[in-house]
Length: 277
Image (tube, rainbow, N blue to C red):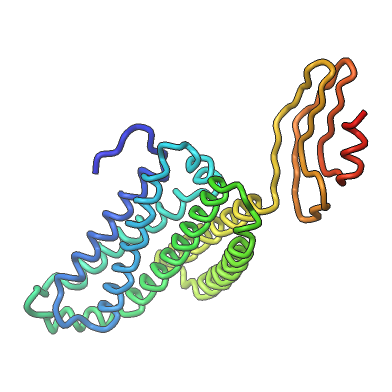
């Protein structure tokens, strides 16, 4: 896939991660009558490919506007993609080694024994892949929601979706924390246990950043510096009914020669009195 230089690291990583997932899927897809744990890997890899493909198309579609880059930077999507790509590469090496005697016509008895003997490793890879897939799906949902908000500018229409998404992210973050603790408790000192714990910690961090970015879009207002012209009026913030859940940040404010301005929140009556003079 040809990609222009305008693509960020995250958007460059997405097709690369998709290619890694496809490479592992092709290995599993070329096996006949595989054990259940390997068949489960095939299903999970297919779902992961679908998610990554949809994500890639969404990022490419929104690349021209420039709105997606700040969102990707704030969420840290590249970390989730890198974790998934690394896992897929480990998956490919493992399955190639465990099924080296099998073909698309026959799953060898020797390989079946090897897979059964190492079933715990394959199940661990499957669990890690589920965590990656769920995290990327959740990040993708937040990206889509944030882009919708930036386009529409009407947070009231999306408030229910934001609330639902924030709860889902919080639940996933809690589940990943539990998985991380379990991985650390069950760590037998092997590379497998350590890599699983590191991956879960990385995904949890992405989940937390995504939750913060999603919440900021719902409750946040960020303004730069403001300087008024002489004898002018200006405002930054909200006028009308108070919004207690809004987090506002402002730059410097400079007024000169009878100018009037305010930053923050102001009820309609006070606003009218201030600017009617």
